[in-house]
Amino acid sequence: MLSNLVNKYNIAGPRYTSYPTVPYWNNETFSLEKWKSSLVTSFKESNSKEGISLYIHLPFCESLCTFCGCNKRITKQHSVESPYIKAVLKEWHLYLDLFDEKPIIKEMHLGGGTPTFFSPDNLKLLINGILKDAVVAENYEFSFEGHPNNTTREHLQALYDVGFRRVSYGVQDYNETVQKAIHRIQPFENVKRATDLAREIGYTSVGHDIIFGLPFQTLEHVKETILKTKALLPDRLAFYSYAHVPWIKGNGQRGFKDTDLPSAELKRAQYEMGKELLAEVGYHEIGMDHFALTTDSLYTSMQSGSLHRNFMGYTASKTQAMVGLGVSSISDSWYGFAQNVKRIEDYYELLKDNKIPVYRGHILNEEDLIIRKHILNLMCQFKTTWTQDQLYFKELPETLLQLKEMEADGLLIINPNSIEVTKAGQPFVRNICMAFDVLLQRKQPDVQLFSMTV
Ligand SMILES: C[S@@+](CC[C@H](N)C(=O)[O-])C[C@H]1O[C@@H](n2cnc3c(N)ncnc32)[C@H](O)[C@@H]1O
Ligand code: SF4
Image (cartoon, rainbow, N blue to C red; front, side, top):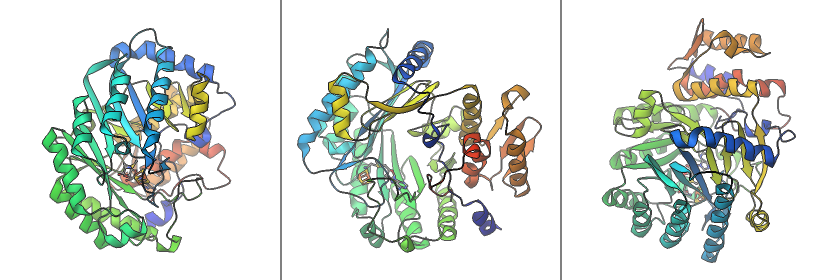
């Protein structure tokens, strides 16, 4: 039964960190002026009520992992740190100039690349530079991504001193054959050291990222990785499906053949087994890909219905405005999205001319806003409700037809004014969201844009 469902629903599909998804943004109706005005509106509406979120992309890594789909620049030259920090602070000031009051920072996340590529002093310089002209919200959450191989006590302490209480470490898989294939040698001792250090210093949430579907990975390897994870008991766990997207320029996914990857069925079996083991350990599944202990804010926010999803993935609370700084970062004003240029040289060039370094985006229309709400509900709560006027879009009959078929397959239940995803349907939530994605239905891509849903 499960393998039939996998065969049927394993298609290329978005991960819905935004709606509309990036390839469907309408860049023709977008302009920097419209983006700025949508952010200013959003800021006025929400800053004093809930604050804003900040995402800062720090793109450098010393060594290339050949599975990695993130935007990164490989270098061992640490002289790149200072100019980059100066540029990010300049970008922040261009945003500050738009606002008529100090932003209240509710959430801040440092992603990458490898934030711990930067020296502790430079990270402190960056954060102090950001906070100098801002106010920190009462229940703020500051977090960063650390590489277990290079996160030192000094990194953890420096970021703790400026308010960080959550760190997530890239683990992927502990098996040596898999680690060799992905060019990432990282023994358990390194992860243990980084995890213990964070707890010793006072971090209240330590997360690990592990991946299934990697080259040469077997069921046994996933089991081993989870058993080792159990020994360290991170508060949060991302259990990602390996996204194979080698067509994205410059992402460096190479060093193994497509035939070295597990089949879709093995991949699904790895996920199912992993999920069971994680439940035995005491983890609860949060939306898609994420697991948390009952003491972690991701779990409590799911229980209270405040779980949110944006470009950073799942977050414990929603802010209407999110500013993304650094190369390739995406900002979200709720009424619009904007993405920064991806090349560091282009980023510097635009900032030199005092230009916000955005190169594409999308302004949401009424229909986008309605559909975005349903997709967010499904991704965060596994259900969505509507009144008649809220569900109006041209393709509604086709959406309902697709939903009915999924109901027959046991993936969801349709009620008069709502749908609920069943336990069996949860792994297929991306497929369910696709039934609402009218932009995808109106224009199927000519080439593969998204990773497979399983
Ligand atoms: C920026 S990295 C984490 C920080 C640090 N650079 C490191 O590698 O430890 C973000 C995470 O994205 C996940 N990731 C990257 N490429 C991926 C892919 N192709 N498929 C699934 N997950 C991926 C990995 O789990 C990785 O830990
Ligand atoms: S997984 Fe992390 S360290 Fe490896 S290339 Fe990607 S961002 Fe860099």
